[in-house]
Length: 462
Image (cartoon, rainbow, N blue to C red; front, top):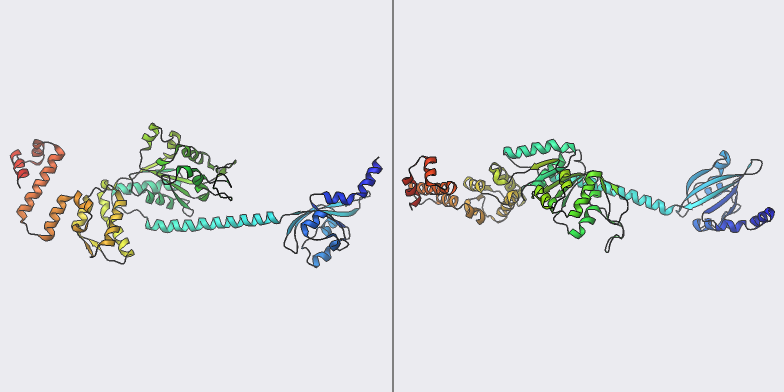
């Protein structure tokens, strides 16, 4: 029975070779090609008659392929592996094995062949993508640094100096930072300042507006998605913000607007440094520093159930509150001068603000904070025809809010009234404001050492 099987094997050896899923190249100890199978012909485009009986060294010399295993295996008697490139550009991985006879003499070399052209191309594409990502990071880091130069905090007040000192202390620690403050106080500027003083300053700074992304797209935008993860998804998939910013800083602006479902996933980033793409099954590690900002009271949001308590505690490591502009009037002048220089230079103008107008701006409450001031200056530079900005040139919202100051500045600019009348108006305005604040004629009289009758007389005098 065994002999019959061996006979059958011998007779059908070529059919068996052709049934193998790998290419097979058989040569003898002298390097002469004895047999290749059908899969080898398909992989290489070389027919049996083109290589059979040919010396493998001759095939190399003729440029059919660039590497061979036969001489090395004959010399060492051990298996070997190499990558071979064919004349047509295809790349193959060769795995060669020695075949010995009963006496231990090496008789044949059998080489199994697999096509790795596609794998090589994929590796090349991955390397190209890696290089492009590195270039992207370098370019974004450069843009961030250049933009940071124009977003340096402008201030003179002690309150803002305290904020800057705090952020410069926290920045190198890599801890999460939570910036609190009204809309328009400049949280974006201070987030960039923190990044610029961190060890990640040469990496990307990526700002994410949590209130500006559609809730249906928030997950895929922030965490990315796998190919075909949902209807309309790219067939190539897409990296999310955290993957793009790997190694850098992610600034989550208006984090109080983030949906609860996304808060849970953000917590995973903070706790484990992992993200999961939409449609993915394996988490990926990311190394990002989180800076968050909000104009909401997150502690109150926690109590009302709109913000996760555990996420709040994770973010509340280094909390910095940026005071409103009305709380630091000393900063109005340097901000006005800074923005005036910037926009005047941009539009090729030369402008200055009159001192009396500067006084009005310093006393204004600025409900829109620094952003309102910046936009106001921008508009003035565009629309103003002269070189000096007077009180009359200020927007109505500011002049109406400071009507009394506008009245006296008109007198200063145009004259026409006696000093006695002007001073009488000033006294009346002062006493009226004092009465509004203290609510009692007697209290005002005691505070300013004046008779009650005098107060009545000056307030009623026209």
